[in-house]
Amino acid sequence: MNKPTVDILIPTYNESEQIIESINTLLRFCEKKLQNYDYKIIVGDNASTDDTYNLVREAFANNSLVSAEHIEEKGRGRAIMKIWGDSKADICAYMDADLSTDLKHLPQLLDSISVDKNDIAIGSRHLNDSDVKRGFKRRFVGYVHVVLMKVILGVSFSDTYCGFKAASRSAIDTVFPSIYPNNWPVNGNAWFWDTEFLVLAQRKGLKISEIPVKWIDDPTTTAKLLRDAIESLSGMWRLRG
Image 1 (spheres, rainbow, N blue to C red):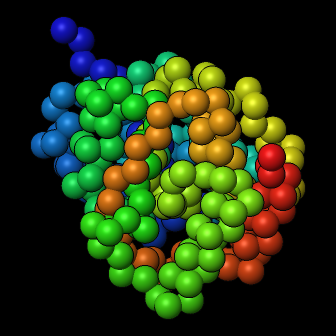
Image 2 (tube, rainbow, N blue to C red; image 1 turned 135 degrees about the vertical axis):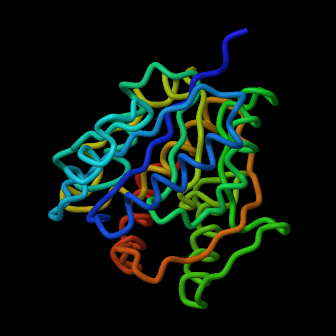
């Protein structure tokens, strides 16, 4: 029996200091723990102004399991739309370049789709069994975001922004045509992509599973709380139904 194919995307923006180490860590993990899957790793470089893209291409030029693609516009949502959209894999996943989410959850994330037959699986920092190390400010903003999502959008899931998700090919093909990237801020990071994808998936009746994760905040993150909060509120208002 053929193994399910998986494309694992790492969206990047100016990650030259850590990207090679992160990829090598992920490769070692996958070799040991993803023996039931036929996997590839794709770095989606979003308009980096450093040498992230070239570093990856040069370091893994002879490794067929790793590739890199440059996207002209900034924003992980744009990277996911492009690379997941072009993929032919049975399952597409993505994770943050800093590997904030413990990789031990990756097999569970993929099994939730290939074994348990969910359409989408997401890591969640807001479940009782989640183990999260995060500053008070970000924890509070995350809590407020969850409350607003439930009130404004009526969602059943609890965490949209955790950078640890996977979706089946059929889920991607079902939801992507309803997402309009030109609705996102031109110079924004397209952080709202995650929420939009999950809200539309729920409205289309797709099965979404949440997995409690061990997650450690990256103090060097490029996320900006005020900017991202404004983008989220604008997106929620647009999607309200």
